[in-house]
Amino acid sequence: MPKPRKSMKQTNPALMRGIDLAIIIGIVAIFAIVTLESIISILSDAFADS
Image 1 (cartoon, helix red, strand yellow):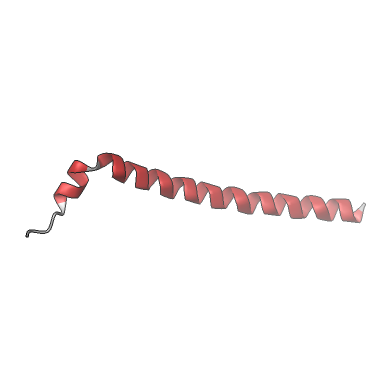
Image 2 (cartoon, rainbow, N blue to C red):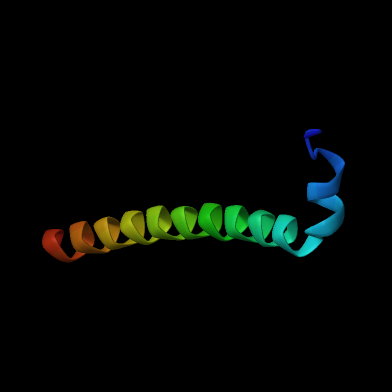
């Protein structure tokens, strides 16, 4: 059996697009969580000082 290299991308463009979307959503989610945690820590420090 020959190795299907080009056929994967030709038959499943939606799958490749879905994988790209999943990677982008994952990066955005991690970035959002990190920023939220930093904002929460800054706010908690501000409330603790006052």
